[in-house]
Image (tube, rainbow over the protein chains, first blue to last red):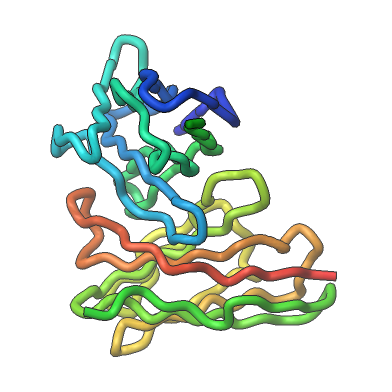
Length: 109
Length: 114
């Protein structure tokens, strides 16, 4: 079954430290993956998508098909990065996103 | 450009009642997807509407139903409410159904079933 797993509920780092938010997936086809972010009191919004290979706000994510992972990374965390992060997998049938449980990132000063 | 809006923001119902949630899609978008987000969980796909037709459905019982109107706004109806239906309900609109179309989320409706 298609599934997205984010093993960490909470990740706490200090400002300037590197960040890696883990995401593993299970999918029988060729996966399309996304990271969504929800800042405090804001709505869920797209951070980046695998197919665009872009870097947004210093974040990058590389699809590793061998390890079925799509970890989100940033070399130097900022306090404004504190938010809830969701990894999501696109399923063509029905045009739906399958979300992980989310990881709360807390960046301390 | 107006973003996705949802109403009401909060709602309290009792078991067995029926509820209707509303979503106005972003200008130019013809597709609306609905998600249920239980506390501490990620959003879970309920169904999607494209040009007034249901385009896909998640693992939710038939008492969850929906509509999309000619202006592409949408309703989510839940009959015979159960305690486990307490959640944040999100709608997202997009300019189509393909993977390249970004889904833009509304602020959500928080439903509490007592």
